[in-house]
Structure formats: structure tokens, C-alpha cells
Image (cartoon, protein in one colour):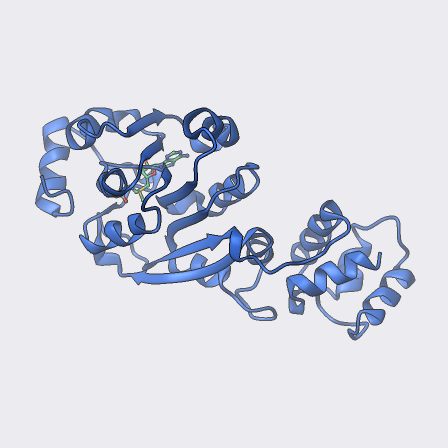
Amino acid sequence: MKLTEISTVKALCNQFGFGFKKKFGQNFIVSQSVPEDIAAVAEGGCALEIGPGIGTLTRELCNVCEKVVAVEIDTTLAPLLETTVGDCKNLKVFFKDVMKTDVKALCDEEFNGKKIYVCANLPYYITTPVLMHLLESGVQFESITVMVQKEVADRLCAKAGSADYGAITVTCQRYGAIKKLFDVPRHCFYPAPNVDSSVVSIIPSEKENIYCKDEQLLTKVIRATFNQRRKTLVNALSAEIKHLTKTELAEIIVKCGHREDIRGEKLTLVQFAEIVNNM
Ligand code: SAM
């Protein structure tokens, strides 16, 4: 069964009376190379897939991985998945909302200390929360390779000071190096969305080595900065950082080599950490 052909997807939907649910961001891959290229990242390891849909990427992952665990919110996909990937002995599907799933407990239980790669074609409506949920799960993934809306990929890969640069950029950089692997045009999905996509990888082992004396304070500083990105850094920080006066904050910013009126959106992760180390 060729899952990457629109005729196959339509036939499966008809057979099981499956209707695409916009609220779950259901745009399935209908390209041969895209799932192969994503799965190649996880070759030889174990994979955690979010949202298997009808199992197109799932099958490729099962072909190259020791074990695959998939989390799917939509229980009406169960009979389709049984037909498309029911024969994959190294696959376990959990019908759950990933946002309500304890990812650490799931990975500990299912992967038993093995190398875990996240691979997913993420639903657009929830891309950033899912990424944050994975990054904050406490699991040491080998990489997180996800298809996201091209605009989100641009934000993840943005340079400091650019319009796309934001809290999600810096938060992902704290976790790993971010690489854009390739773009995927909208016609590679069924139904076709009205945006293009890109596949990005977050790789913890290639992370820039940064010393920060207080990670929680760094989180607070990043949040404060991007919550009020049009304000100067000193004003944005003084609204949130209560143990320092505005004058003290200004002194720290200047001591770190910046103009007193700099906006925080211009700072790199290293520069944020340096400011925290001087607080
Ligand atoms: N992996 C399939 C593919 O590439 O063809 C489907 C990708 S589709 C863009 C997103 C999938 O995520 C859908 O199957 C959808 O039902 C599922 N999904 C949406 N929200 C979810 C959630 N909160 N938890 C788990 N799965 C979710």
C-alpha cells in the first residue's frame, strides 16, 4: 500500500469513514522522499513520533529504528493505523494528547535508556507548545526533528535582532543547535495547507557551551525581554526582576558592553547569560 499517494489516502478515508479534522491540524504527507529523509535522522535508534496520522512517517521510522512509540490524539485513526502499520512489530501507538502526556515517564518506560529521536510532522495549531513541552520534558533526546510551518522554522533559526527572533528561538538554542534541513512545499500534503513547511532539527549535543549561574533567572530574563520586546531592555527587565533597581539593571547592561537603551531582542543567548551572570 503506497501511503504517499493521494488516491490511497482517499481510499483509506472512504473505507473507514474518516473525516479530516482541522482542529487537529491533519495534513498528511503525500511525498515519498520527505518521510524517508526525516526517518533517516533516527536510523539505528528509537523514535518518538507525535501525531502519526495514517502512519506514513511511522512506517518509515519502523523500517530504520529499533523501536517506535507514537502518540496520537485522534482515536478515529485507530482502525486506519491498524491497516497501515498494524504489521510493524517494533511500533506502539498511544492514543493520547501529547500535551497531557508525561513524556519523561513515557520515554523511561518505553525506551529504557536507549537513544531517542523525536520525529514528527507537527500539527500547525500547536507547534510551539509541543516543542516547549518536549524541551521541558527533562528527556535527553538525541535530536528533535520536526516539520513545522515555514514561518515557525524561520523563527527558530532567526538571528538576534531580526524580526523573526523571539523567546522560542532563544529557548530552543538553550537546548541545542538548530538546523533547518529542508523546505517542503504545500503540495506535499493532503489536504494541502495554505502555507509551506520546513523540517528543522534541534540537536542538544551540538549546543553552544554557555555558562549561566542561574538558569531560572535566565528563563525569567528571556521571558521579560520578549514579553515587551518594543521596550528597552532595562525597562522590560525592571518590570519583572524585582531584586535589582532600575539603576542597577542599567549598570549591569552597560558593564556587559551594551548601550543603556539597547532592546533585549538584539541580544544573543550568550549575551543574555552574561547579563544574568552579572546580576
Ligand atoms: N504524521 C502524519 C503525516 O505526516 O502524514 C500526520 C501529521 S498531521 C500534520 C498531525 C497529526 O498530529 C495528526 O494525526 C493529528 O491528529 C495529530 N495531533 C494533533 N494534535 C495532537 C496532540 N495534541 N497530541 C497528539 N497528536 C496530535
